[in-house]
Amino acid sequence: MSNKTTSAMEDRNLPPNHIKWMAGGLAVLAVILFFGARALGEGKVSLQPRIVQKGWYAQENCTPADDGHANECLCKADILGVTIKDDSKKVAARMQATLDERTPQPSEATDEPADSMSGWCGGKKISKNPPESTITNEESFKWRRVYESKSVLTMLSQFYSYGAGAAHGMSGEDGITFWKKTGEVIEPLKLASDDAIAAANDFIVNEFRTTLKDQLFEETLSSTQPVLSREGCDGCMMYYTEAGWNVQFGLYSVGPYSSGLIEVTLPKDIFPPPTTLMTNAKRA
Image (tube, one colour):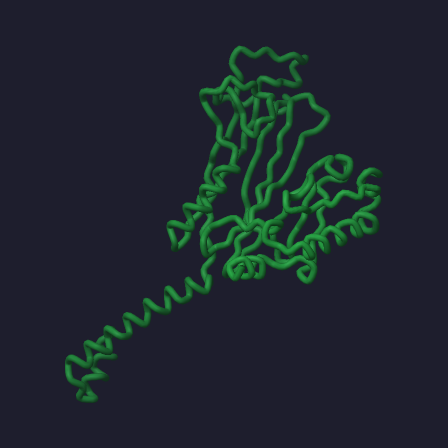
């Protein structure tokens, strides 16, 4: 407390004990406001990128099979993990463990070849970069925050893998939606009602046969199998965004490579948002 405030109290002829009591009360109030703000989730989770594997790697006892332009014995790595921090260390540790499980973790003891498309580069790191014209294996990975509210955090990983000499690489994404109060992963298909899942399936089929029909396989358009079920998302994954639950289909799962990653966002009035799902689950 400032001297000016204390002097104002003394000018009112308050007993010293009352002054101390009021000062202590203000301190307690400040603590309550701080943790109250935290309980309401006003602060964002802190995310710091960290290097898991970066640079060029050469596989031992490996001889390139091509004429020198493509070298499957070399691999370029750009793999970034993330360090997560929260006021609750327990919550942060739980979310961190989940993110680490889904982040490629290179092992120095592996005999896996460099062109295995394992999500990271095998071999030993080299200091000299190959000529720019050399085609090599590539592995990249990174996380980014796509949505955060007072109770929900969605992280999305983006990855790319290429084997030297291949016609094209393979890219993809993986989304995770966390319940910030506990750090647990929200599993929408285990929490939603049967009616909500059925309505979501109808919406996806309608999107397939109208908006997305020119991007999909014929067998996708004629299929009568539900995409979403209690067992999971068939050929797809779900994560929450500002617009609602996003259902993303991997390369080749419902359409050709040229169509890329197919996405359908479920309206909130069809499939409930995370807060509704978690609140209903706690009441059950």
